[in-house]
Length: 102
Image 1 (cartoon, one colour):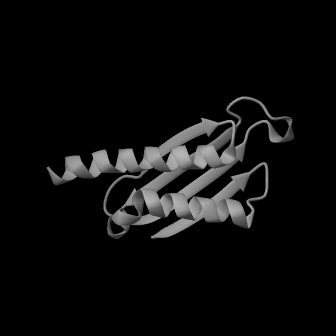
Image 2 (cartoon, helix red, strand yellow; image 1 turned 90 degrees about the horizontal axis):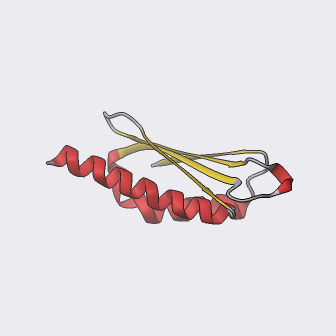
């Protein structure tokens, strides 16, 4: 499964990239054979000013032969946004595949 990471408003450090990789692998790694690619878009909406829920994680998973599934999560902390975003995409993909397999 190919994971593409992009950051808007800041530079994605190795630590952030490692966290994304670990969270995505833990959440949906077991679905790797059903996905072609996962795109993770990270953003800091207020840049250096901070503020509530100003960190954004948008994840788009592309199942083989099906429409993409996308989620978005905002949090005060980027690591929290990534972790919660990974949990959301797991739930969304689980629902999609359960319906498809029924």
